[in-house]
Image 1 (cartoon, rainbow, N blue to C red):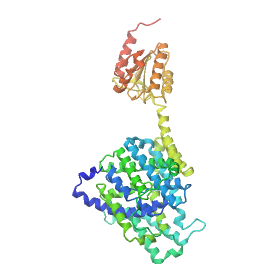
Image 2: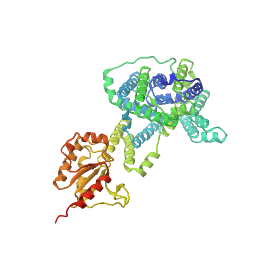
Image 3: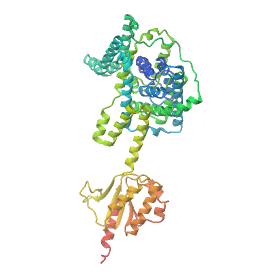
Image 4: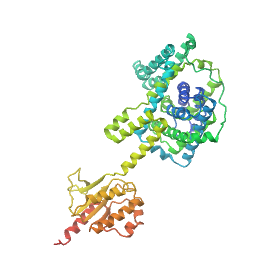
Length: 551
């Protein structure tokens, strides 16, 4: 807690101050936009960007992560609450805060219990499929706002504002940075300015609406923003908590995955390391703080964090400065925000989430591993056809299922000796020497309940009538569970009945320590334990050569 503050140096202040100012320009429109995605009043997005940032600065481990509203968690909040309360109602807001509370408490508990390894439960392709599907769902949900009404009743003025904003935002994202560099601006500054372009475009749209009085033309506006800081407190209902428990756990899981991903990405650029369990505490504390201040579930945003980093942030003080500036905005006259047109804000949301679409990962997965490509497609389709929560669950099941499926079908290689060397390799890939009465097998996975029977069957199918010795080369085996141990013991007995000796070679120390206390070695192997494959091959070859030939 506050370890970054203990060694703070004066020369770091300029970078943190500049980053804090620039990020607030991005966070104001983005926070309000994501609150709309969550089905909440725009000001809730500002509330969810103050105390959560301060809480993360106290407990988080990333130096430059920006914590606040994020597209996916906002969508999941809206999806979970849609059937429980009217969007925008007081009950709806209270339940959104309760979801943040549940998610935060669970994340804090996971951090205290050191459950950071849970971040590996979703593979990269599955996560990519989920975010890409969610991006399309969010974009589609904003079309009505962008056009000022449904396709059958478009408001021409609102549609003009929305579509022009969308065009300008797209040009700013795709062209502005490059054009600024051509004009002589440094690449870092050009990239940062292009990321801040949405704030300028929204300001321009607000000025036009105010000057032309387009409100009377049917253009929807954000409306008055309540003055003052959010009041602290939380109304709880046991009945509501029960109905919100399952979706809140899913949102908490996504909060951790998104925040962890953003933190690790930027830590790699800075040559730092992220403490996964500390991240759980930081993100959990941020969500508890959001719940207490009238917010909704929050997490680390890769886009805002990237701007924070590019703007020169050195420590979490940059996020503290951003939070303080937001607080100042709320307590000072902000009537101009009421004129911000919703179609322009919808364009901001669409451009932001379109950047989440990922076509690179499925393309690379298709070239490298078709199973991962299928997992991407199934998760992507699941989000679009079944829903966001179902898409998350489908992704988790697919990730775990893929791991189990691969572990249950390990690669098993028959080894031979490379001529003139002490190296043994797969005879299907190398021209290696073998002995007709000796079979060396390498199992490239741990032996556990999910693959023990398959391994035993494969071993028996590999043997021939000439086989007298089977050597299991265990260089790739780190674990043998109880089921695997029973399978090896039964294999030992089965081979002995056929006159074949079972040997082990290159057993790792920790595994050997466990085997010494097992029946497999206490009721001795029919063969021996060799230190290496070459020693097993040489000794057994010599024994077979010296043995008398049977008539």
